[in-house]
Structures are given as structure tokens and as C-alpha cells.
Length: 175
Ligand SMILES: Cc1cc2nc3c(=O)[nH]c(=O)nc-3n(C[C@H](O)[C@H](O)[C@H](O)COP(=O)(O)O)c2cc1C
Image 1 (cartoon, rainbow, N blue to C red):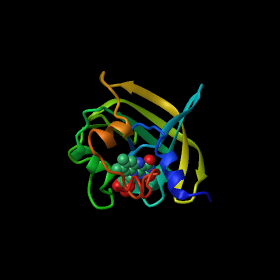
Image 2: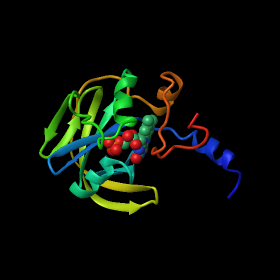
Image 3: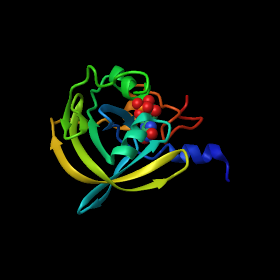
Image 4: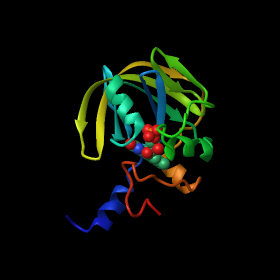
């Protein structure tokens, strides 16, 4: 492979938003921060998410076949991002003090969210460290007006860090 530093620097120019992906299984709910959420088709609308195989959210999406995505607002506090992006539901209950709705069995985070979507998994692809889940949208809601939080704004203005399980983790974003 060509010089990895050059590849990472080029990859770091890709732009993303920041989202909470939530799911539930066996009476337990959980969610995680994710930047890799994107629309795949317009009709019927489908989205894809890439989740690390070690994450509890991965296990729940895989087992339940359902997930929700909450689009975060620019004002989202770092403490909230830290809760969903740096802690695992294997150790704490992330939903204990976070405003959310239940849509059937699937939790949807509404705190700090501009809009939310619920999807059912229609395909998945093993990508090594991560799984790419493709979901067909079942429902969507606008929660408030505002500006969506981008990964770029999170890194430059909030001085936010990345996580070893993020799809974008490399020796540059690590710093
Ligand atoms: C800025 C940022 C972006 C992230 N993006 C992703 C992502 O796209 N996919 C992923 O699997 N993990 C991503 N993560 C890591 C998860 O949020 C993290 O591993 C979380 O603790 C998993 O929680 P869980 O075990 O409760 O599911 C990201 C973390 C941060 C801080």
C-alpha cells in the first residue's frame, strides 16, 4: 500500500455529521455516537451505518434488526458526546438520564437532536472490524430547527477527539 500517512490525510478530508445510533434487545436499550451514517437510496429511502463489532450497539442492531438515528445539533455538549462516544452500554445505562422516546421496541434519543429516523435492517456486510448495516426507513420526525453538528465542527470548534472504535480512527485523528 502507498504511504499510509498520505492516505490517512486524504481520508481525513471526507466530511461527516455526528449521530446517535440506538437500538434495543432483550428489554435493554443502548445507543452510541457514530459519524458513519449516510443515505443510500431515495425511494424507498434507505440508510447505512458502520458499527464496530465490539460495540454493544452493534450486538443489539444485529440481534433486533432495528435501529434509530438521531441527528445531533451543533450546540450538543461534549459531556453528552462523551457519554455516547466514549462509554459503553456494557458498563453503564446511557439512557438513564437522557430524553428519549420508544417507537415500539426501538429507543430514539431526542435530547440535542434535530431529527430522527427509525430503520429496519435489510442487508449487512462484514467489513472486518466493522459491519455495514443497511436499513430501510420506517419512520422519521423533525424535532426542532437548527444547524446539524458536523464532524469538522466537532473537531475544530469543540476540539473533540475520536475513539479507537470509530471508522475514522487513525494516527492523525488519534491526536
Ligand atoms: C467522534 C466519534 C465518532 C464515532 N463514530 C463511530 C462510528 O461511525 N462507528 C462506530 O462503530 N463507532 C464510532 N464511534 C465509537 C463509539 O461511539 C464508541 O465505541 C461507543 O463507546 C460504543 O458504545 P456501545 O458499546 O455502548 O455501543 C465514534 C466515537 C466518536 C467519539
